[in-house]
Image (tube, rainbow, N blue to C red; front, top):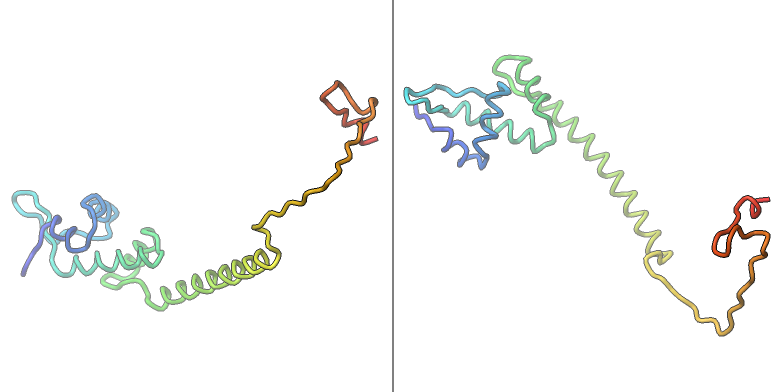
Amino acid sequence: MTYVTSGEVCKLLNITKYTLRHYIEQDLVRPAKVAQNGYQLFDEKEIYTLYQILFLKKAGFSLKDISESFSKEPGMTLSYQGMLDQVEKQLQELSEVKQRLEHMLSIQNNLQLHQTTTQDRPIRYLKQIPDHLLKTETELDFKQIVQ
């Protein structure tokens, strides 16, 4: 049987040693054997398990979900039908979000909300604010204005 070191596993799966140690601490995977020099060695089974963990993480599952699914039946992985159902649900939710965004974008484009227009007016009329609406020269008395 051929064993590979943790460093080689990390290079193979493009993960960090910290990630591998974390998965070991979470009891998601165990080294097949520990050499006399303390190196953790992995065989094909553990590498496949790590690949499944990485795939499930990429699919959006938490480590807790993955751990629970691995512990349900020894030697069995997460129910692929359950995974498929969850992914279908996520796709449906994303599809709804996409439709809403497309609708909002079409409204924005039709109303031209992203464009600002100004108009020049030749004459401007300024009104004087009545004295009883002023607290001071620069402050308005909002109580008086509301009444």
